[in-house]
Length: 626
Image (cartoon, rainbow, N blue to C red; front, side, top):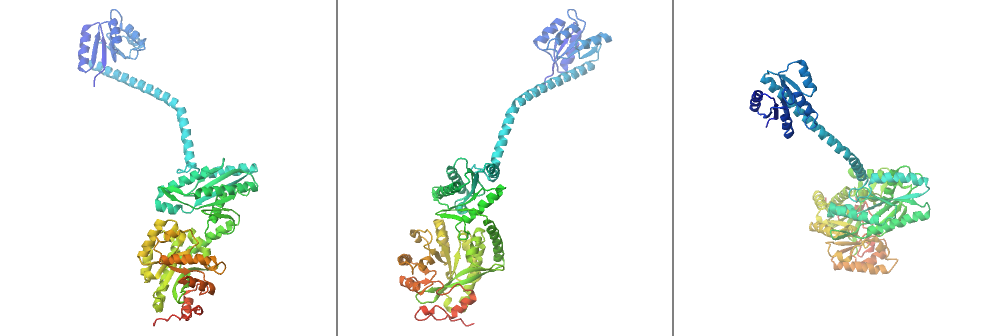
């Protein structure tokens, strides 16, 4: 690293030569001036880092030279060390007064001179560094001061953005639960004071999980975006929309008139929004339809917390689901849509629902559910061709609970899957036992209903195979009954699942045929063995002759597709005769027997009560020798 530049000023050449040689050997860059005026010129041409200055010189003495430099802002920071033979104290004092930084008396020790040079050069460097740092600091302070307003603005923008993100759904960019809660609480205060009303709508579709399972989460996100757009497009000015978890949307309607007209406007809007959601959505060039349910709550002074009105909207929405379990409410069901207005009695029903759900979980875990069996009868011979297994629940406090009461609970809580497996196991086990007792039941089928949730389980076939293996029942003796809706929700997936089951030689039946929305053109695609005609068609045979034509068409179709026909709900001998004449092979109903426990079924095997309707009379089932 190059040493600093030093200027020697002395009118004695010998002194200059001595110091020059020593300083050059130390690596310094050295220049010399033999007078004060030449020193001034040298400094102006190239300012040195340090000056060694003699005092006694002819034209300008050292004091004058020093004063000259200290009065010039460009040079006043250059350290000046006086080197003089003048040793009086006053001489030294004056040297410091005019701006000198040090004073060396001649004759001098060169080590002293070098030490003082190094010291003052270091001090100069330190001062320069401090000045530079101060300058940089001042510049940074200035820049920072200039940025403060921008940073405050940016901070405010970031805070607003964070608040926005905290109150808005990341995917759809509508309000989220905290965001709507804040708005709703404000509305509850202000509109109560203004004597205006408000309403909350809770909407959801019932196929979202199945759609994401089938097409993936990206498709689910696309569906949610399209749903949010349709809902926003259909809202009146001032309405607020929010997205809660999954496919759950909530709409807040403000400034409503507190009269019948205001309520009617809300109901009409609910229908319009559901109609918009009922139109097919396009996901990956595939049209997908969803069914929307809507719960409606009208604001009233009794509501003090936003969470309470949101809870009640959810309760109303749940009651709007067309599952057959909803208690009476202001309910309107349309194709693909239903809405329900909340009433206060729903609270107790909701609590009862939760209790029933807990009890059902315990009943499944402790095998408290029992099976009843209803025989399937050949309408030609009157012999038993199989049995349908129907679950019953003997509740320790409520008594006997029928499936219509607890099945909706099982479906909503996803307990239907373990419940269904329990029923399937017990049914297979029971038929296998009967086959060991009765020789004529070797070809009999045990029919078990398969719920929609069971049908879409990825391990369905594996679970059924395991049950058949554990119970020892042959696969061809098991018949699974599946509703039209389970199949038609996703035709391609349903066809694949049915093919898997059929490949295991398991029998398949479409239950309640004629009540759903299946297309007859799809039937040929499904490997189905049996169509079960819904009881509503059978019961109307005695009331309206046109139903004979409908049943004849169904029977003809089934025979064309090489399917068996089972008529459900046969209650009269007239119905039996008409169905036999139409070519229906099998039937079940109270005319033959109501569902019975296993022991009661064995009594029925011994004495078929329906034998009077067949000629020759039906014989009892012979028991195998034990």
